[in-house]
Image (spheres, rainbow, N blue to C red):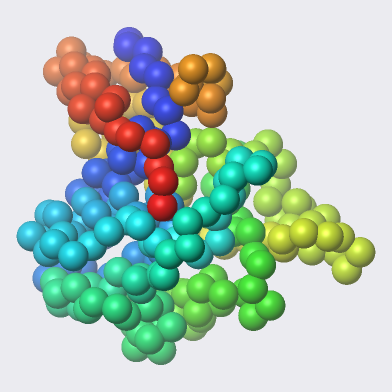
Length: 247
């Protein structure tokens, strides 16, 4: 068994690498539609998928986000959203968004949407600021209405201890103030899943936190064969110099 410390930005890169090799993503790239909805973690996902396709030129994570949380007192740069990443039959449709293609998504097409919370029961939720529920509403119409597949790349720092449906009931009350919370149901994909997919090792969250850049980090135990454990160590080592996420 090996123990590894992964910071949130390392986790974003790991999730990106894992999603690029995800079997449902791989299966849809030759024929079908894949939508990577803009978000900070999904910026890494889009980068890795486009790189694997040889189409990363012209893509930037700068501005590839909508709502975002920053530290108190910090200010985001004023950047224009370049669009979501929409891939149709293996070709990146530059400038398109989920709103352009949502009505055309069909059974088996894949939507990747990040989340702000996930609970021990495999449920996730997204914070909502838009009065029409933004990209979530467009994506879920395709997921629930036409059986598109929803995968939720989400970092371990987003974990919560309570049922997100109950949290949403609290947060969405008429007397509440602040963003709303929208439960979504799909396949969660965290750093643990990325490690398992890319190395075959079994990964478990065992502790968290730190200082000097390790704030919000996750301590992970990986178990498996010697080769799998070594592969997990090498994988985490490959992302340890990932710079801070500034989009």
